[in-house]
Amino acid sequence: MGQKANPIGNRLGIIRGWDSNWFGGNHYADKLVEDEKIRKYISARINKGGVSKVVIERTLKRITITIHTARPGIVIGKGGQEVDKIKEELKKLTKKDVQINIFEIKRPELDAQLVAEGIAKQLEARISFRRAMKTTIASTMRMGAEGIKVMTSGRLGGAEMARTEQYKEGRIPLHTFRADIDYALAEALTTYGKIGVKVWICKGEVYGKRDLSPNIGGASSASGKGGRPEGASAGFGGRGNERGGERGGERRSGDRKGGNDRRGPGGGPGAGNRGGGGSRPGGGGPNRSGGPGGGGSRPGGNRPGGPGKR
Image 1 (cartoon, rainbow, N blue to C red):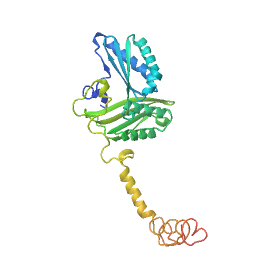
Image 2 (image 1 turned 120 degrees about the horizontal axis):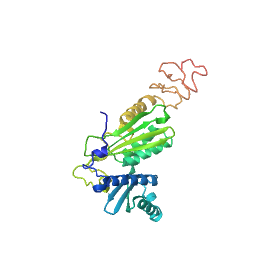
Image 3 (image 1 turned 60 degrees about the vertical axis):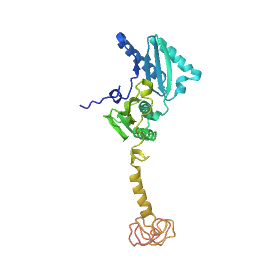
Image 4 (image 1 turned 135 degrees about the vertical axis):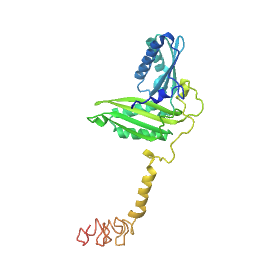
């Protein structure tokens, strides 16, 4: 009980392709270990390049590596120098011919790995975890995601005891296989220990047969229903209208604009709780509690000796 299936592994072969595409034969284990080495090396080598995923395809003598990145300029370098260096280093590591392709991610806010790493970097920079999570959720929903869930776990805010906090907006149907859900885990290395960040992003639902070749399946945005669920407002949590409207509206019309204007010369019959007529700059309107006592509140009325209570 309580064990969760990884949303990506759960959808493999249905709406999502594999990140390693090759036939192992008798040397499956060696190739698998080599793939892991390549991925670790690339993520350490280009740690500021916004690398989302590395797709590895193999033929008999060549390895084709596709790097999905939000910042292709950093990965390519001036005149392609950086890519050539990485290619040479990978040739030494694998002892095979290596070809590198760069794939640009147009909307990094909709990529779970980049979103998780962004939150982790903010936590390392000592930004409040709640603020980091909420601003990230807002920007992802603005880009047209159907739903997002963010969970952080560890010594949040430097607390003595570790705990887990999560925020979500929109819908994340984990049991619906046709729902295109991107999932990622990142770790923030803070001075008081590791904080784990998990992100689930729902990009819509996929109807019909999807091409599962690795560089198409994950990169294209899902067809079907995109965007925000009905009734959600631009504010966090999709509930801005009901609260803001009802509170702000009533106040403006009823309470504050009493008989006389706030800055009026005083005197009038004032409406509302705040003692409308002549409250601040002097005069003898009704007092704050609404009784008949004289004297406006601050600069007139009772301080220099008016009869009414404040």
